Image (cartoon, rainbow, N blue to C red; front, side, top):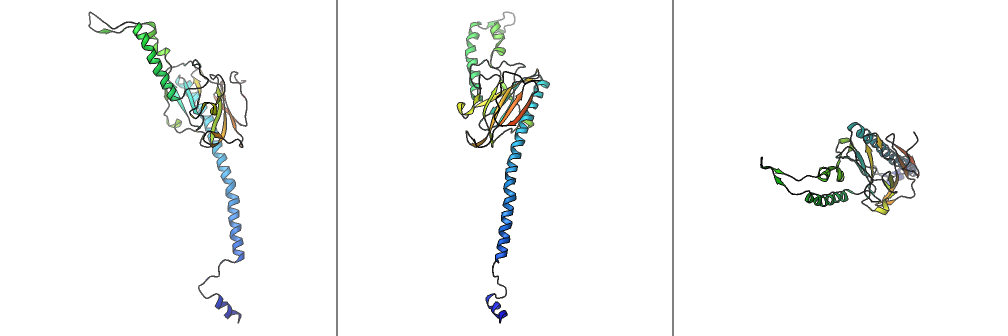
Length: 263
């Protein structure tokens, strides 16, 4: 009687669906997967941040060594909002920094304009030097000369060339991090991203004498474009001038860039 009743309710080849026990088992498995996966997402993110900060520190040392070994002046240029950074080489061995009366570093477009203004203004000294004369013996032109014209390359702003070596391509602290504030020794004061604007850049110079500018960076998690995540603890990166190393720690630390670290 019981068997015939079951056969009418559950004909052969048809399923009666999930039992309560099966549903409980499936839900338990789903909850287990989420409990394992969610912390791993956080761990992956933290590992990525740690890797990028560590890479930045290694790049500081790399630039320091490169300047000493090549005998040339370099600078690290940092886009504060995006976190992108790269290395540039000067066209001369030594560069005087801090001579421009600005409270911030110039972006690439502004530096091109500065070069153009110099060339335009220098034409006045070319005119004052006189005109071209002909050598009566060789019929060759003799251009005008003067101490100012001779010193043109030393007087003009330095030209910088981006280092395109493989190890310096695609360098960035982003997209999860941004530099909200930084200051190097040549700055007149702290460089604040929100004060300067989206095109803000900060620079750190490396000299062939084995010296890098004392500097610090306050690095924040990025909430959105130009907006830091104030709920997350920031990082402080300190550049040690006499060692060419980067000290990375959590939290905000105040640094006097005019005083070298104790050695």
